[in-house]
Length: 182
Image (cartoon, rainbow, N blue to C red; front, side, top):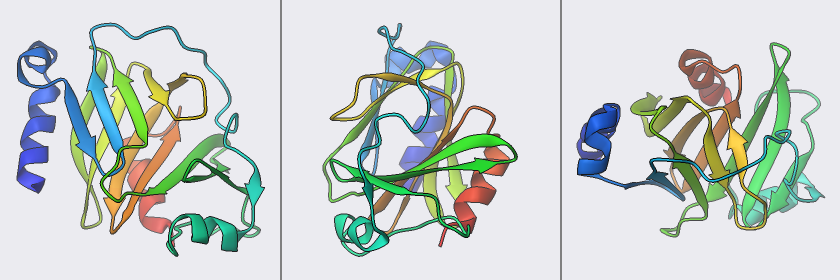
């Protein structure tokens, strides 16, 4: 499966081959759809629409006992909405959004990537992942309006699908932050 994802992601990095090969890519609880043109969307703060603040216990319960958080003290507020637990923190002065969901085979989050967005296969430790960078892409969640997104690292760790987003993130820094989650 990892080789298939790697091969498809490599092929998808070439804009001319995207339409001929594949229009959808799935990773854990996320679907990425490759489109020629993005629909209208707004650029909103990363903390907008994350849902109500919840305790760490409620966040863990929403993820069936699993929760990975950055090693920060104090921990930023946790939010939970429609099965997705999120938090926003500052990294090197820029906001970073971490979102995670229990991925039991269903797809809860969707991304629309246009022709200028690169989608490449990556590793986060021993986990499979995808890196979306370049042009902005669209992030769709069940209870929120579409939002333009910056660079995003997606990966699957056990039964969790994780998403790390930040406008100023590089792949190297995103992987460092991802590996630091506990």
